[in-house]
Image 1 (tube, rainbow, N blue to C red):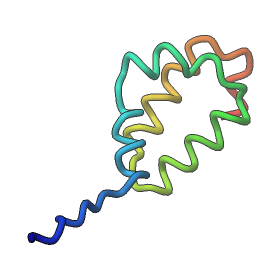
Image 2 (cartoon, rainbow, N blue to C red):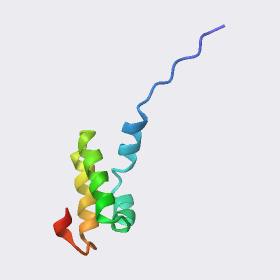
Image 3 (cartoon, rainbow, N blue to C red):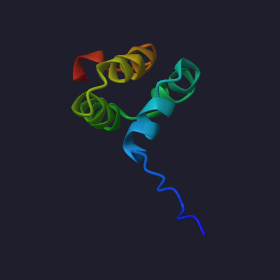
Image 4 (cartoon, rainbow, N blue to C red):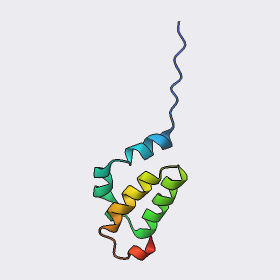
Length: 70
């Protein structure tokens, strides 16, 4: 009997890759409060994904009431 292959993946990397979809950012970024988005941006940058952080920030700022908060 063969031993099962070990499936290893990084759930954080998969999650942040999923969030790199421009359509998802356009649909949801404006719904976040500024402080929520800032937490998300900090997390994405901490994960080495400034591209994802900037994508979401770009879409959030299009409808942001106070861009100075970012």
